[in-house]
Length: 139
Image 1: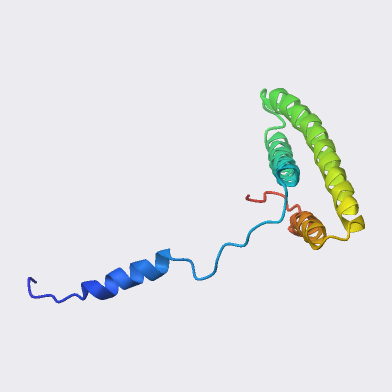
Image 2: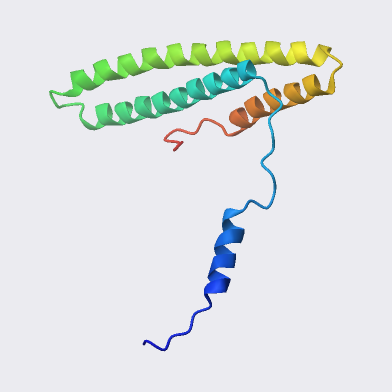
């Protein structure tokens, strides 16, 4: 097996092309405040999805263990999760409204950069909404 020939040059070229991006990373036109708004919106959106999954899982567990003594604990956990879900949905709505207001302010301006920021902000929220809220969704 010592006579195996390998072309080390081809391996190095393959590694170099794989690690070098073919296209430059697109630069965002958003300000730090706008990026923060989007991060907070996504954070609350992910929390809503997680809490919805928790509510579904607890509902299934309650149905499965309805005659067990631990069912009361599960019911208490379900109530807590539902309350947290309401709070997170409200926080997400507030951030969504703030983003909509920001987009409206940007639409009024004539600067091309402002229009680009508005399109990017609106596009991110639309993508998040179009992903849908499937139960037991993995994020």
